[in-house]
Amino acid sequence: MNPKRSTLGWFWQSVTGLALLLLLGVHFVAHHFIAAGGLRDFNQVMAYLSNPIIIALELGFLVSVTIHALLGVRSILFDLGLDARWEKNVTWALTALGALTLAYGVWLLYTILQTGSALAMWTR
Amino acid sequence: MQGGTRKKFVQLARCANTLMAFDITLRMFRYRPGQAAHFETYAVTVPDAANVLDAIEQVWDKHDRDLMFRHACHHASCGTCAVRVNGREVLPCIAPVKNYLDGAKALTIEPLRNFSMVGDLLVDVAPLLQRQETAGLVITRPVENHLDGKPIASAQGLDPESVETVPFNRFEDCIECGICLSACPTMAASTKFFGPAGLAALKSQLDKTTDPTERARLLDLADDEQGVWRCHSAWECTETCPQNVRPAEAIMALRQAILARKFGFGK
Amino acid sequence: MNLSLPENKKIRFLRWFDFRSWRLGMLAYILNRVTAIGLVLYLYIHLAVLSMLTGGPAQWDPFVALARSPMFLALDVLLLAGMLIHGLNGVRVALTGFGIGVRAQKPMFVALMLVGAVLLLAGALKIFME
Ligand code: SF4
Ligand code: FES
Image (tube, rainbow over all chains, first blue to last red; front, side, top):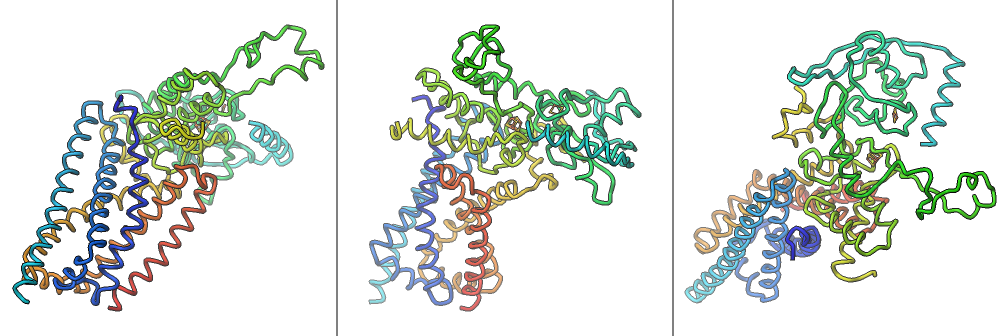
């Protein structure tokens, strides 16, 4: 497919945008409004993450926000009227950055869960 | 177009009644290639009912015959005169001077933005016309043909019977004035953007044809990084267009058509 | 200073800041862009900050104490404002892009921003009451 023709960036921007509206509601309210003092301390974070549904939501949030943010950055850069070669470079660079971001996010979540359960084991 | 003409008549009538004149100051953008652009101030006297174009003509008449500006019809149908008055895009031929005078009695006149400058108020509108041409939008159609391509017989036009049966010629709303391109924030950043007038032209042509090859060509032009997807919904084109072309609405409609083609719904 | 000079081609987008041409649509455009850039920056700062969680309570809990200080809470309100403006304007952009409410985009923007203002006020109260 001609990459110039498959301009569905805007479509995915809308879809992830809608997802973010919903997920952000959960994410924001759960982290800052329900928790006393507006932010969870370490043990509260671990208790929160012990629910697999929450983990799925947080992962969904990570994916949506990364796609939405980087499509947005791409759009801002394309607005500057780049030539075709730079349009391609920007797309590749942002795809790579997106992959890195996702990998980092997953690694982070995994490590936090590890740390949490290790600590839980020690304190038990 | 009609509204503009009517307005003009009303103003002429009012002019005949009052015959009042008043003094104003015009701060005009002056530029020649190779020279520094600057503003120059001119004092002119215009009748009570004058439009901004009349005031510009006064500057040309009384102060500087070198002034470069464009106009033809004087009634909002040729689209050549568009400039910015106090930072906003208008057709000066139908913009009453009165509307701009709130005590200050001074107007700032600048050329349209987002075009290459030629001199003074003159800009190079070729990029706009090229886009309209790519879209296949023809404003001046040969008078000897109907829309369906059938020639109008010389006597036919006068025959009331045949007037009932021949299809009407549909003239385009867009007068190719370039105002929307000047007002569009995306156009301000990217010269490659197909632009509001161009995209409206694609939509207009799409509505006129059932030929699948031509429809595909038009949708391909619209479905491009620098086509409908470059628009970020500022709606300034619809807001400023003097002809009610509503380019932003055309862009949204093109998005529907593109998504329908891609996902195969709504056929 | 004039922003419409042809020699300014490289920085054409500076024309966005010609305040005389700011109408509602232009304002929405600029707000959307400014909040977008802010939110992307925040996203990466947020991801970096979260790495403190890997250090266990010894690293995380002092940060939480800091983040509960009034200065941080004010930044939270700013963040909330950015999210509300961007998210609610996004609702307008997405809906009209799918052909919904195309003729009512202006009142829609005003209404969404009013909703945003109310939510911001509620959020700010909530943030500072705790
Ligand atoms: S769409 Fe309207 S503003 Fe744009 S060139 Fe045509 S008439 Fe002028
Ligand atoms: S002179 Fe023809 S549109 Fe103004």
